[in-house]
Image (cartoon, rainbow, N blue to C red; front, side, top):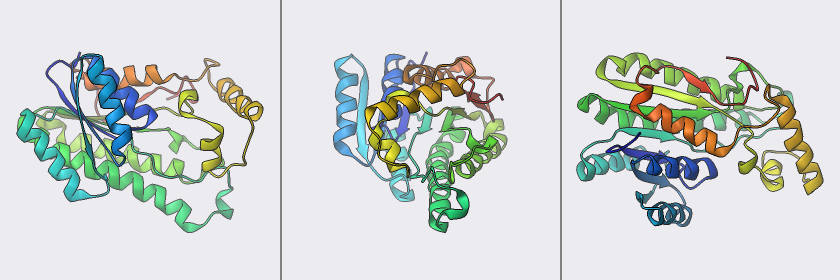
Length: 260
């Protein structure tokens, strides 16, 4: 599906990023992994190369406009095209606290992180894609702009990302570039008791953690949570020419947490 495509994946060392990178590579793309932790990026590259794929890593901070622009330019210079850009960078939300009890910076920081990393990475790719007359930019968020309690700034950050996708799609669509996204959240493979606690929750043991996973299952229309491989497959489809008619919108890969 992605033969002869060059894809840059921001946040490629994380659980979703690594799954998407491996799926893109398996589909034939040359993947350019970007993130802040060299060791995790290198581990993903090693997995891809051992499976016969093509990958390379670059350590950078997506908040650094100059570094992101230089990285995109280097891909163009070395590979000849930049066909796919996907941002899977986390935003540092605080969840589980009523909004009226939260600090201002706990609201504003995730929104700023979401807008900045998505805009900076999308702009760097789009400037090359419009010149070559093709390409796809993909964002990912939880779809919480629909409204969910105790989610902190998540819904606002998601809403900003949704608007960025739609407006950028309208601007650069006539020049051959698609901009779209995926809504997903609560993938069991990406969660752990420690990670849930990092969002502002209380420490929990394995029994309590399993209770959270069971609750997430029951929230879905399908009564099961989405899997990591399903999200990676969705991203692969969106990145492919088979999704050529999709732009300015998000695919709902939440297993029916909400209708869309």
